[in-house]
Length: 421
Ligand code: GAL
Image 1 (spheres, helix red, strand yellow):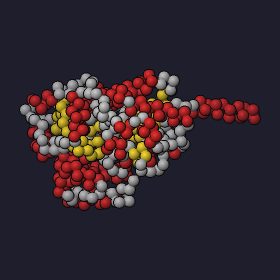
Image 2 (cartoon, rainbow, N blue to C red; image 1 turned 90 degrees about the vertical axis):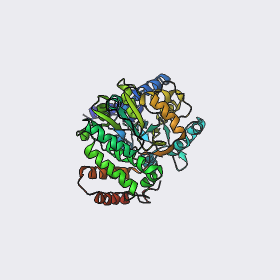
Image 3 (tube, helix red, strand yellow; image 1 turned 90 degrees about the horizontal axis):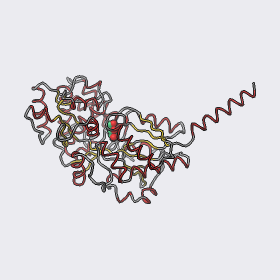
Image 4 (cartoon, rainbow, N blue to C red; image 1 turned 60 degrees about the vertical axis):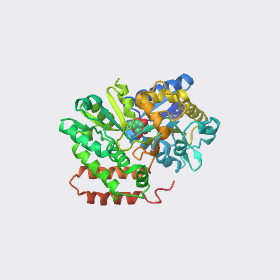
């Protein structure tokens, strides 16, 4: 009996060692069309460069990382950190750095010369208290409007230059019998973009930043206008089944001509390309009218968690070096719909939306997306998105009452204490 017990313990130990043997374990949330192909292509490139590293990819469905971060935190607290994981640079990353869960990689940034090839603003977002903690894989743009070109042609419509103009266009599209704006907010964040991007377009980048810094609230006339438009759009202009769809299913409505437009980051570009559609022929893309000249950044980055074995740490560094190369950035971003975070990647192989965005990034005013983790603390973002849902689902609540309620939420979550990092 005793012998069997000992044997059992030995076998269990051997089993767990086999399971824990060094491998490259990576977590991301890229499961939709376009983004899935992009990460697969990058992992294939990594495998080509390092054929001996065993890769374990762990995609956790739920755009914008809504589900993945809970998984990462459980793993870290169980003492089993993954080798690396997708994180938005900025506040989402600070959640980990402020709890001392990531290893600084400043030496790697310096020895690889990355301080010379990534834009300064991106470097700031990848840093915390003077140290670098992550490497950017891409630059996405949140303030984009995607539209079905044949619907626009058929109705003789043009994309306007102001957000008010866009509201008028939506009214015309509705009158013609189409859904003006596709939304898929099964996970809340795509609806929050229908507030965030109009806010940027209507109030401008300065007030936008001040709003997320708690210096301005919904009582500001421009913010109030964005709130009013958000509620009006969600009540009158979106697909009735919006709450049961995901972001990519909403893009699907634009692709198949059921809806005329959608407000979404340029991962939508990757989604449309994945369907074989052509920018400028099947679908058009512009900055959300009113936000021309402003680039709302969404940065996907990869860090190195604390507590890795020396071999795992080496694998993590190998991955970071791969994604930071000109080739690594080109392979991923061409498919993803985004643009490279490096400024020296040639435009070859990128589509027209990407080439325009590469140009505009150089001259535009840069802000960062709150919905996509960079601009504001995570507890605020969750509370803010929940609160927007409340006023969205109560369209009869008078605007002033909604303003008062939402100001209360902002006041609780955007205090000077919350905003320290
Ligand atoms: C964003 C992320 C993008 C894209 C999108 C939808 O938060 O930065 O890379 O994947 O979510 O999943």
